[in-house]
Image (cartoon, rainbow, N blue to C red; front, top):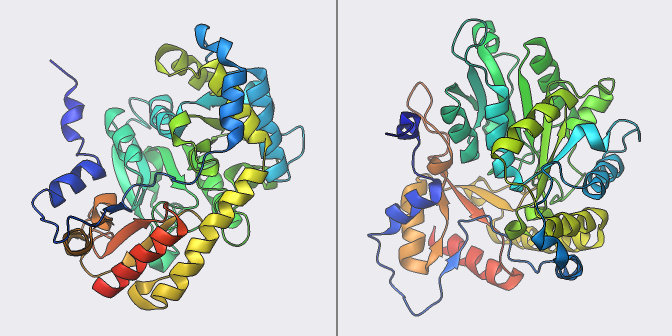
Length: 397
């Protein structure tokens, strides 16, 4: 006996990748493999992380509060206010912020929070950008809703738009996910797009979840936030939840520390839900996260390291594979005609592991998967190793 909704979940993309490559024999097994398939930052974690964890080691023998500490919530509120030039009164640390155990946990629980049994007498739908981060689909399925995939392709600058989805779809919408900068395409949602998304969510009474975990890795203007868009629309956070974490910003994916900020009513209900089933953050982790959100020096250094690698990529690929330098994030989204075959070729002939774009998207009503022609490449290793791998990819493909 089990929840049969689990039968509708597909394998995670990396499990599918293992299956795809399981029968592919590498030609040169002496050369070390390089994994460009997983967005796992390999830059050095800040020294501040270790020193703060050690300083607060006595906190390991205490049960942590679900809502985190006042210091953590205050540091996040201060960071949001500085980063997006908000009025100091806009974010109330005690009513607008919660810690989460990394954004994946929070993004999943957002569906449990937001999706009712029915919406306007019908089965609810969740609007998901296509391509997408896999947790959006898993959360939708396990909440019993119907996923609706909204194209996020080159023709619309890789960001979805929902206001033209049609009245029937929007009447049934309970939740919409957006990722900015987008994974995998690296495109940033403009402030106008975010304002339109918020207006649409409020007009149709659904929750807008903005996944902004790549917000601090950018190469031009700092990406705007849905929080900033709320401020421009008058200051209300109604219907909006914003997620961010330290995984990419501070090279600390193992810390499993992030936050959600937004609508105070939704935050209160999410706090109740997390009290029953969420992973409360240990006190030493909350202390380390507090220190990291207060420090920007390590973030600037980290951003510069990624910028150097993207500058190298510009010189290597030029105008091949529809290459473009993304607004943010640390992925390349290269058009190689057949992402599955290219992935197998790179593993077989170079020991380079990338992710087929089709594993990050779903086919539309015409059977066309927008990710099929692409591969995703994570520029997470050292500059030298990354440049060597990118040159090899360019030569082979």
